[in-house]
Length: 322
Image 1 (cartoon, rainbow, N blue to C red):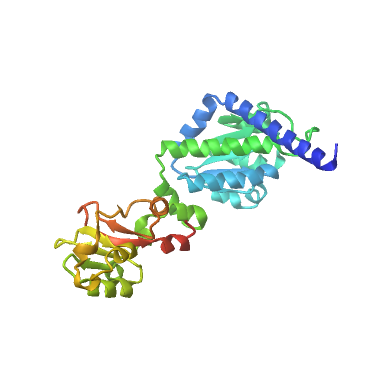
Image 2: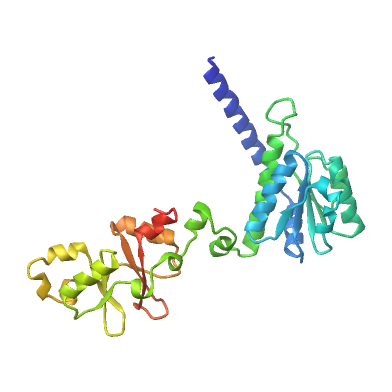
């Protein structure tokens, strides 16, 4: 076996071992998981996540996932907790303490603090008889299946299971809170994910920037409006301001003969594709790509057909969509 084959064989075995461990975790979930969800749902404060070493790194991620999905949470380092950060934990909170062995000495003062002041404690460990799980009010147990290294020393399977347990907890809470994409964007406005959750109303052009003309407008004036606004299109509205058509480059080419003597109503494409302000910008991009167009007029749902704005593909590309 070549070195390359050996490397790939080891890597595949690690992934398979962790995948089997995740199956075991799914099968092991019981009423204690439901108790943990119920406890957090009914707490008036925040979830304080704590752990040391690799458990601490995973704890940081769990706290961040909880916070971004509607459950107020933050991470408290157990060593710092012993030097003043216990003041960050209050009576209305719930503590989620993570330790694969359940015997991390750095957690001792935090655990004692929760017991002294009656703060609910959720223990996450693979050892049900450990100090952590003995003191905990609710137990999130991960299967004890060793580690992917083969000699039980490199946190791998245990950290994967801990991370999965945290994700399961966060998403269960999210579902019960009816936490939706629009809520998620409040906590995650930046990056690719924030862009995907942008609404059309966040990106569209409004007011005088929108190219609109009346149906009876001569095409000589329509061309000027297209040029002034710079979107390559112009919307055609009726007397009530409702969008009845659109004039595009294609319409201009089809009506080149005597174009300037015609009205917008004679040249326009009727019943153009539109979108509403509350639609996701990602949906708008999909429509534009499918129809091979570069702009969508935005119409009012409350006043059907009323032109409210225009979304151009470049607006979407600027925020990372497309």
